[in-house]
Image (cartoon, rainbow over all chains, first blue to last red; front, side, top):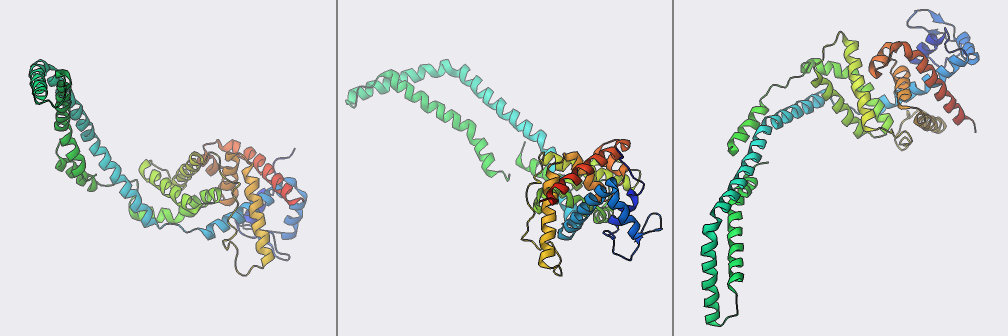
Length: 184
Length: 187
């Protein structure tokens, strides 16, 4: 099967230069070869050549589609595109510059949490005694006043919960303040 | 680290020189020569001019940041078109060619008669549907060759194909599209 034709270039030239389909009585000016291609002859050739016929069908349809797309185009200006590209580049540069700080802040937060847990673990024996004592006192006092039968263990549990909440507050307050006051 | 340090870093970034491969004047000139073809293909493919705007912006951004060295203007254009083609492929793995053109828009000159306008609209729909049945590479090749008038070398550079293979690939794609358009024409 023949896949090429010598006249393909003439057909493409005619279509690309907007001279196809040819007007009767006019010649198709071949831009590349400067020669005029006989209009009727080219038309006759395209009608009889399957390669050029397909070429003319496809190229003309796509050329028309392109003309319509170009006509409907409402492009942003070059200034807009340049400005957006510049802004994006700066934003990415800023993010890149801030990345080590973010990593350091994360590490600092993790270290602070670790130190807090370690301190609590170390201090636990000295906290446990007073807590138990305070629980006993409060329990006895409650029984003396006849408020309710409260066990020392329950009071101790409540005091422990309060201590945990206060500790967590001390750790988290700076972080919350930072997030609230930060611009980002 | 204190808050003021972060703010200072942000200000430093604002004052950084934007390092693009060309200055603004050169870019404006290049953009004016290339923007329509870069915009037209995604616009036609997606039927969405806003998406086409986004892809256009992204293509020029990547092009500016690429920092490549080009032997001449044609090489520079090929590189840009290659970025644009890849962007369309990446974002629309399955291009929505089946989306019909917006026939409410006045795509035709006012001087055209109603019949002519209807014929042109029908042709666009036929083309859109026929293109939908081609492979993405075939669509890209045909568009570059016959809508943008690119040479085989330019098509090869834009699509990352060997120039020697373009002729036969183009022939097959053309024959398929012509057959599909022919089917549509027959009642």
